[in-house]
Image (cartoon, rainbow, N blue to C red; front, side, top):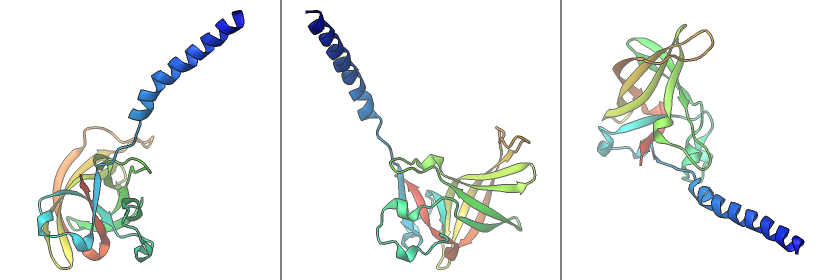
Length: 176
């Protein structure tokens, strides 16, 4: 009798544990709120939209056969832009995983803006589209960098309008 009692206790503990875990497992699914348009598919209806710039890839994108978003977005693509007569290199910072990625976590960064500052672009608005270039309004945040490599809070903010050649762009990320 003591054996059955002990077996029932173990069963009860396992049963209750599984019952408590199942709701948490079902809630632990990924999320995705990013859409994508290739540079050739953007049009006048995209003017005024908040977008994330996706620079052209270093690899040959003509080999991609699927339109799955993960095939278009790579980490660390770079390009140069002219900000007030100064050429700076912007690097894509992507926080994208196999089963989740959120629009607001994607940004561009120029980590060598100055010795003690990092420049980041979290918001970009399309202002105009021409045959060979796109006019973007960049909302720039300039952060102080500390000796330990950490970035400070309370950035200085400014707005800059720049033309970027379509030949430097792969596409745009949109919030779904």
